[in-house]
Image 1 (tube, helix red, strand yellow):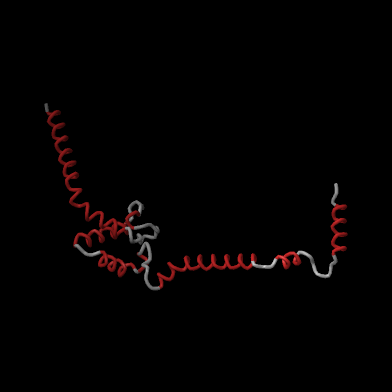
Image 2 (image 1 turned 90 degrees about the vertical axis):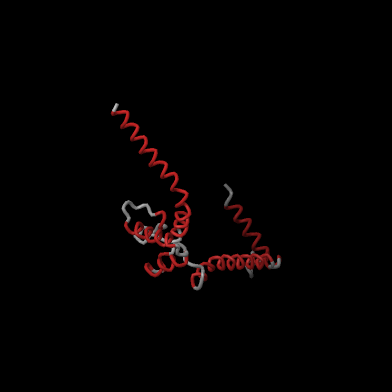
Length: 165
């Protein structure tokens, strides 16, 4: 009899715990998703070079404190800009997972595209220059100057004789 009561009590406690977890998820879902979105823009400062929300070090106190600070900011209702400024003031601009696209960072972001376009333009220019050379200059370029056609023909015949197997 006491065993069945214990079983019922355990089941009731388990059901109550499971139901509070199920009912509390939608209430915190907006804050959690906003915190994950904002936290995805920062790096964990423990030196692991991972995004804050994805730091997987066991017992990483740095990510724990940073996430706690982030959750507190979201709970206070701070905007994303306010939270970002707080992290930048505390850790510097190295906290950004992706540098902001403004100022010198904008130049750094755009240079690879500029170099690609410039290189493609140079390659196309060189190809058109090669194709625009006159055909008689190309044929003449194959024959060294000062060698007559007779000497060239004798040299070809000699090479043909010597390379026969």
